[in-house]
Image (tube, rainbow, N blue to C red):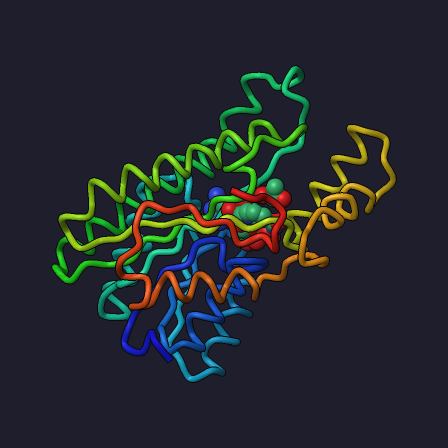
Length: 259
Ligand SMILES: NC(=O)C1=CN([C@@H]2O[C@H](COP(=O)(O)OP(=O)(O)OC[C@H]3O[C@@H](n4cnc5c(N)ncnc54)[C@H](O)[C@@H]3O)[C@@H](O)[C@H]2O)C=CC1
Ligand SMILES: CC(=O)C(C)=O
């Protein structure tokens, strides 16, 4: 257990990849503050973590609102005694042809995926600097932050932006002992992909399930990714073995994209 005595904040922790990360960090010994807008599911994840013998708290917040993100970190420090790891995981997808995108389509997804990630970086960095013992910031990127995908163009743009923020923050925060990295999953069978598949069907006329199957067929390891596949890597990024790594957005996708 590499994270005993550490406190982590995980956004988008009520389900999917965020839930998987929160549980894995707790299994590695961390206490966890769970941030999301889905109150009921947050409470379930909190109960799961407490059953593992770790402390857990829930914080209902919209990560696109800067003050709310700062409040989650402040409350974590007050209630769990500090903060060592910030996982900026929450994000949303959007399926739309680029030529159909209008100004209203741009705002929300950028506010959540890009602004929300930056507010998380800022809030964590402020707390880490005050504590004076460094810290780990870990952002959710995607294969779509390495390649642009048809009908996922605006989403891809947000994830390329996350890579840029990750690199710049790594450079700005290194003098404070803070590392900043990102994980880039491939096709993880969460609610996000159920919705992507449904919207792809609407946009292309493909049957429900066909887009998901097509993406999965491209995975070298021959199966879709699970939240646990992502969580193990994030736990490594959160732990001491990644201390010499910063500014990286690492593909953890079963061999879907090769770089
Ligand atoms: N599912 C996949 O195949 C992949 C997902 N990702 C990224 O991983 C992250 C997690 O994805 P999934 O678990 O699949 O998604 P999901 O849709 O299953 O879960 C996302 C969670 O984030 C929360 N959330 C959304 N907007 C929020 C906001 N403004 N404030 C607070 N919480 C908010 C939702 O309530 C939900 O609990 C996202 O950043 C996504 O872009 C990256 C690559 C692949
Ligand atoms: C949801 C996501 O990032 C992809 C490209 O599958």
